[in-house]
Length: 121
Image (cartoon, rainbow, N blue to C red; front, side):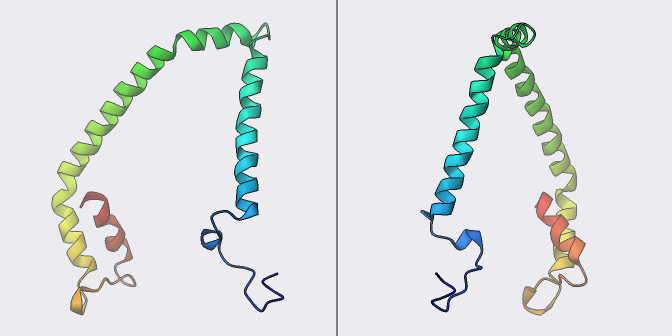
């Protein structure tokens, strides 16, 4: 339709209308896929090999949550430590990136410096 009206039919998906039929149908299809896989989990409980495994995993869910909490805590601690070690160098890399007149970034010559400093700033 856009082509016949003289418009450009090939514009990016992020510029589509929020209620475009294609986007709505893809969302409904994704929801249907999720529900179909959940139905498979229910069917697997009857299987003699997968049923007991599913029951065991259901009883272990609290232990799994505890493990992921400790894992997240350790990961956060290492992230804070790295940030504490690297904060000084972030300012140096930022100055190396924004050295052009008027404070403009030099993406052509200092591409690595312009992306690394943002991690620890």
